[in-house]
Amino acid sequence: MMKIEENKNLKAYNTFGMDVKASYFTTLSSLDQLQKLLQTDLYRNERHLILGGGSNMLFTRDFNGLVIKVALRGNEIVRQTENEVTLKVASGEGWHELVMLCVKNNWGGVENLSWIPGSVGATPIQNIGAYGVEIKNMIEEVDAIELATGEQRIFKSEECRFGYRESAFKHEWKEKYFISSITLTLTTKNHRLNIGYGAIDDTLKSMKITTPTIQSISDAVISIRQKKLPDPRVIGNAGSFFKNPSITIEQFTSLQKIYSTIPSYPSVNQEVKVPAGWLIEQCGWRGKKINDVGVHAQQALVLVNYGNGKGEEIFDLAMKISASVKEKFSILLTPEVNIIT
Image (cartoon, rainbow, N blue to C red; front, side, top):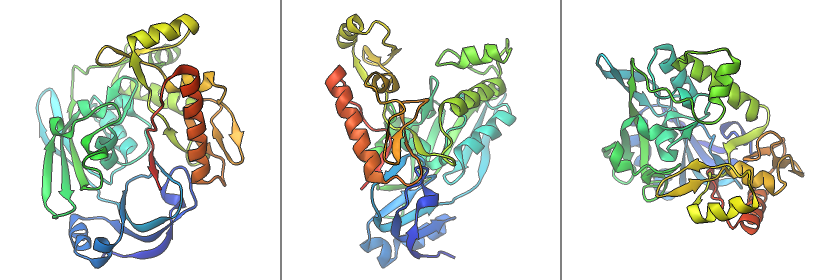
């Protein structure tokens, strides 16, 4: 039975730990409940927000409308061959829990995406990625409900227009669809292991791993992320706040003449990707604290709430950081986090 709550505190539902309220709140554990909700005057008359794990959003104030918490559960093997397994997973499942299931079963492809908070349904919206891997490489289909009509839609991967932390669900389809499940194809043998990005290779060597497996890569990624990123259960945060910007080769060459140690990674369209964390650190922001918010001491890309910070304070800090990077490097930082105003 669907329950509607009023003036619901959302502090436990967002990893920044922002102490804000929603005018109305409901939890959906089935598509039947969604269909019934879509017929209500409350849904038709109120602004609404679909909430997964709350790990990639910043509430800057109370939400004047209806928050819909996704709690659909379950997964099933759609098909399996000698080399691959295709898995359909409900949107309310935890992402890291899914990765652990895959690693346990020796299903390869998502091990580099270990220890990423949030729900399965949010992964195609953001096209989550880490350590040289993006979820778009595994997604076959995205099942969704069109909110205006209640009709089911199945989107093939190429229809989702995935980009760097981007998809059609994040822009032109924003607030138009309720993602109910995703379908992933993973390897069962001859895994394409990716250890060349970030500190994975060095971490494996420190673990005395000479023949990497998806289990050891997952362990290495978890170790790296736990050392570098604050636990949102301890310090409120949403992980990386900004995207890593891509710049032209000409601009990078000019910067390299001034900053010889500037790091970079290959991008697309003959551009160069520069780590946003490095840019922010060069502007002196790492470890800075303003009132009860700040920039994490170990990773400048992570903005944190030390306990009683407000969303607008995090947002103001982000804008100051972005302005200083623009002034120093002529590079515009774009938030990766969804700002809820």
